[in-house]
Image (tube, rainbow, N blue to C red; front, side, top):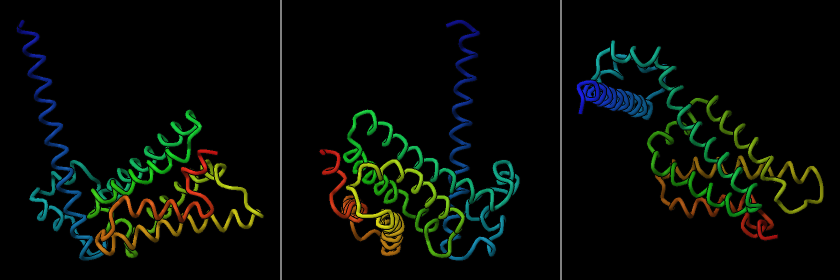
Length: 212
């Protein structure tokens, strides 16, 4: 190996180490805020409290975030981005394969498993005392994707029935997930997913619809 190659390898290794360190630092800061939010609202939390819990100094905090709302926004955006990408991937695959029902079932199971794996964050983000704007964004995301899913549902008797079914499916599903989180995930992700599918498709399941 030449001297230049060794130098390049050393630079890459250093960059990887710094990237891992940065990710670790951001993770402990984000986790610390979530733990504090389980006890009190954001307005009652200080940067110093977060730093003490994360065992970092204030300069480290401000190297990554502008303030506490920026930190919370980062956590919310990471969650929102994952959910958005999951539903978009599902819809793209479903439209290519003309099997939106089966893909929808899979996506809902994936989302419920993600919630279970990240329950401590989502117990805060989706709690009644959490950031209402995040929950509104989440509902907006679901409405946008639901419009593409709705064409696969059985025909209804009226436009009003379509609206009521959509409202029930979206708000009912979100309410069920909030209850699931509040009760510390007493049901399995698969059980919650199946209930959501049944609620959202009152006449037929998504899988049945895809077979038509």
